[in-house]
Length: 369
Image (tube, rainbow, N blue to C red; front, side):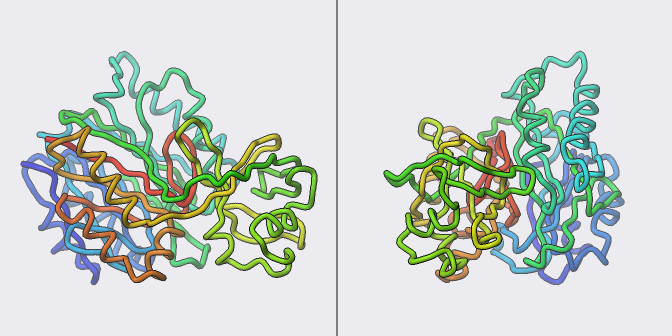
């Protein structure tokens, strides 16, 4: 028994289930295109593995050891040799009240973990939620909870850039307005981190007026945010800002050696900047410059091998902006090959979860033996 992975571009659920099948499966993790909803993957997978904890999320393109895919479904099974115990919880209502939904599922997780000796070296949490909600509010609830002594890693569900419907699945249920959490007590070592190929420039500034609930920044250094940003990156005016400028010039919060990227999605009313994740007033941010995505990711895999010498599997949560960059550079397959020697699956997200909700990064979990 081991970690097993498979992919299906056609959505052939029977072949996928056969490929990841093994004795005593404890957990199944899967990612699927929104178009696959009609196949009811959550029901097919749970029927096949009734004793396992099964969790999934919708994607825009997926990753697998067998190759990258634009559409379809990827899946991973972990057996009793890797996972001692596992359970899944789901909560709906994240669009209207993400913080309240986060508190409800947090309390449910804590109730299930009562009287257990929780060690961050033994317990691993995976979290997936509707990619169209304010996911940062959900993550804040978990991050601020001092009594939850375990890592929580994951991604925001995605669709095909229509921004109309994203899905999360828990056991036999699927929702376009939910958050799902899988908690596993592991028998094997694991390592997790987040990786960004963007590095801070010398330029930094302060957010002086913002509406975090709308993810809008109105002023930077007490000036019109869009105009200030345009001037900083060498564009003549805010009217001339385009999506390519945002992707190549994101902002980031720098904490020590860690960079938490905040990507811009557009200009609001000619004055404000719309972000994919909120920024608070009085936050210092740095202008970031992207480097070599492939070289940086290769270094990340090498780093993980230092912590887990015998990696047997990996989960990848890659930002959709990185995916679009890989497509533009025609390096999608090159990226996938960096992980193809592992039993890996992953998906391109509308945000990555690593303590907080952030963007334009790769968040990954590597499993040992």
